[in-house]
Amino acid sequence: MSPHSDGTSRTADVLFDIRTVIGVLFAVYGVVCLIAGLVSFTAADRAKTGGVNLNVWTGLGMLVLSAAFLLWSFSRPLHPDEDPAVAADGGTADGTPRDGGPSAGTDQTPGAGHGEARP
Image 1: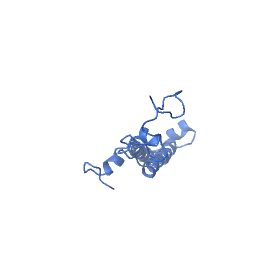
Image 2 (image 1 turned 180 degrees about the vertical axis):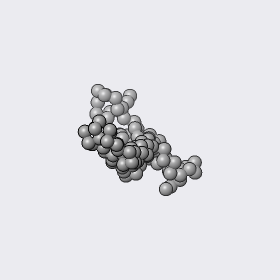
Image 3 (image 1 turned 45 degrees about the horizontal axis):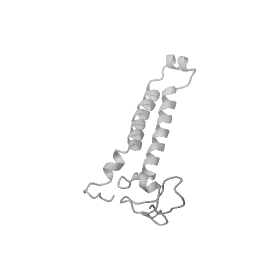
Image 4 (image 1 turned 135 degrees about the horizontal axis):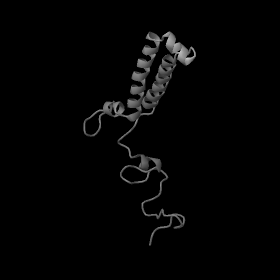
């Protein structure tokens, strides 16, 4: 991973991305539920749930959800150096337009005309 301008790596950005945190928490709880369901499914539990081992199914569902969050996090990582508002409208972080963007001297307020220069 490439270092930031302050020398830190992007590893911390990926690890503390909320999607990664949620994915890891669901994985931990999913494994706990899965193990609990495999180890301690008594006849009383079977009678309460109609024969369905809810801990196993809940654990598997949590592991699937965890995999989805982690896949999303690693397939589309965050780029904290870019401002999302600026990137969405095609500009750059310093305010200059990218290819085809509005020029610096035009008025972009609604109803101001078609890119006419301000007086």
